[in-house]
Amino acid sequence: MIYRPGRIFLSVPQMGGHEKNYVQKAIEDNWVSTFGPNLPGFEHDICQHTNARHAVALSSGTAAIHLALRVLGVGPGDEVLCSTFTFVATANPILYLGATPVFIESEADTWNMCPDTLQETIEERLKLGKRPAAILLVHLYGMPAKLKKIMAIANEYNIPVVEDAAEALGSRYSGHQVGTFGRIGVFSFNGNKIVTTSGGGAVITEDAALAEQARFFSNLAKEPAPYYQHSQMGYNYRLSNISAGIGRGQIEVLETRVKQRREVFNYYTNHLGHIEGLEFLTEPAKCFSNRWLTTILLPEGHTPESVRVALEEENIETRPLWKPMHLQPLFAGSLYYGDGLSERLFNRGLCLPSSSSLSEEDQEKVVKQLKSLLEEV
Ligand SMILES: *Cc1c(COP(=O)(O)O)cnc(C)c1O
Image 1 (spheres, rainbow, N blue to C red):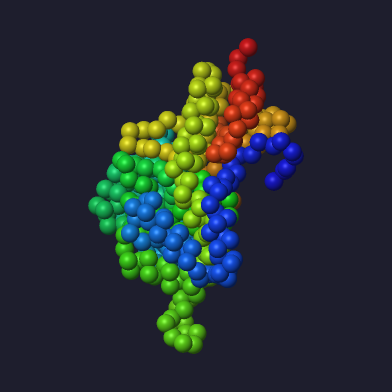
Image 2: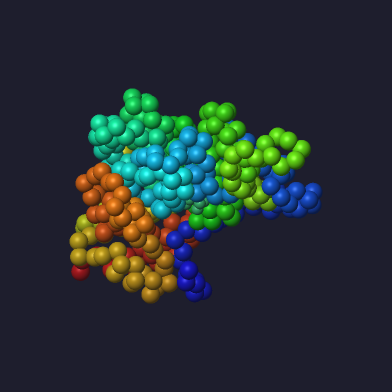
């Protein structure tokens, strides 16, 4: 990452103030490991906030996706139906497990997994004798996917759903927190997300047995014996009590962060919405986005790269949209169902500075630069 003084970043952490109390207490009490009261406290906070029954705090969102798929029994040779328009961390755990991703295209109004394409894909895979082991769907940039339709399809074919809500903590669909619709929901507390533990993640679920399994595998699959006894291969995916302390302070301010990110989005739409050909992603009915990142689609005649480079010269960080998984060299030759929508979005889109702490002055600066680049004269 480039740093010059005064730089306007894409997304930075913002402490709420109480984090240091939890961390300080942990240090004073010597709970400086993967045990200690902040861990169950943080898990409790996550449950309270999302209305989930069980939460397991983990070392990253990627670890959470890996464990979610693992406890649902995904293994070698299995197919996992996965959103193509996402960050690679969604899809990598499919490979960790020796399974095969089948990438599903997005729909235009949420940029998330298209329910119709999902249904067609399931039918085709079933006809070929390939029963999908799981659906791994993403709520990209904080926008909820069409959960009602997707859950209806998943239930019809009896395929478990994992919601990658890494970018969408605090987003709601029909008034319910995302992550609570599928069998398992996943959050990330990486430093660039809406709230952070400096690095961490969690799974949530209604199913006590799944939560128990996730906890078990996150602790090296260590069996309850006085010596170290292992019958299965586990992972060291636990969160530290120090990180959980940061998380406790952050959950206290999560709703404020959602409000702030939504205000950033509103400011951009109010000041740039008039530009011919420039598009923002609006919320479809029932969708409430945490607006983790404000994204734009550029007018014709502008490429994301030309705008990114021009803003970079002004010390403003922007980022292209995620490059779809089916276009990644890593996944060359993978199965993909869709009409190329995410590729078209990728070729037109940019993420704007969206930190909850973004000052009005800095946001004015971004708007001014974008206007001078994009407004017809
Ligand atoms: C950040 C992110 C992840 C991974 O989370 P980490 O905590 O960074 O491992 C997974 N999926 C999506 C969509 C993300 O944006």
